[in-house]
View (cartoon, helix red, strand yellow):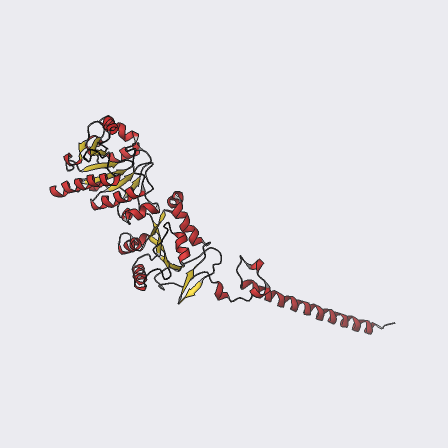
Length: 387
């Protein structure tokens, strides 16, 4: 039999062995946890479950998400919230090459969806001259929020010009460099020019009653549906000193990339207003001091037999006294069908005036942008001559 002292000694030895075994296991588990933590921190969340053992040790620097600032303390750093992108590095700048990231998706959505442009209050502007014009104009440069420059897509001096202009902005836009494939994916054109920008929309037109008697005002009401004609008329409106442009329901989306390109940034430099109905348009024009029965002139196709029968008497554009009122309106209808039915009926009932551009026999009608521009320039000529 064991004595009491022997039993106590044996119990102590057993306890020490168990403690040693447990300590060894805890140490082993702790070491394993440390290894796993290192591996976890060295891989992206998206690909962690699919990586092989050899991939865990890939350098963290190869998976950075944000390129360096182009202008430290001046430009915002580009913050990417999407998944891991594979990029090549040229010099000190990282080049965006992935076509599946948040940046490409954002641009594609704004290019293709009117609703997205409305909700985000932004559109896409592309082309070297267009983006340069926006950045060069003090009234529009702060509307530019994001710029993509194609790596090697422009001469080095041109790229420097863009970056210098960005540095002068009070709210510098984010600037990134990207591959030609990324620029093409974000663009609405077949052959992009190497620069594309995300631009906020300017505020809609706000009438100020205090300016009602300060100079003569011309308003342009558009029902045109073609982006090219709409952009051309916007440029003509600026050239003629038009106060504001009112877009009727069913007209072309003035912020679509095609219309923006046609207007050559003019749509950012003249107040625009979208109305939902003819009644809303009339109400607003009356608030602006327009007397519809004598100051509202709808452009008609006088050469068309049907148009002549529907509209009645229409004055040649040069026989109208465009200086008789403080506020006048020129309205241009759709290409083909012409004026909408509510405006056509108002002209026929004598509630509005009609005007046309006389033409030689054999020509049914002029292009909407041409006829509208001719009328606007005549109104501007008369007003300049008077004042």
